[in-house]
Image 1 (cartoon, rainbow, N blue to C red):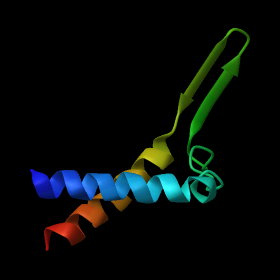
Image 2 (image 1 turned 45 degrees about the vertical axis):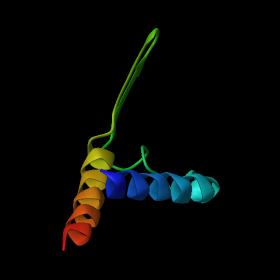
Image 3 (image 1 turned 30 degrees about the vertical axis):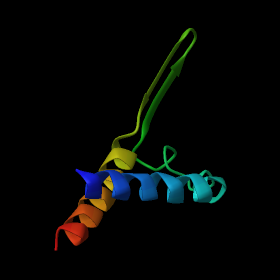
Length: 66
């Protein structure tokens, strides 16, 4: 449990320090993300972004597991 909390803390620290650069990455505006804009109604479904984030997280967790 201690190792997990330390890794989580370091990860949050790194994300916090790199946030100005991460906000410029076009996640959420990739081709394949669905946006439905109608008067009084807006739906955003980031399918491509979810797949990309899932692949990256799976790779990172796989590397930590080894």
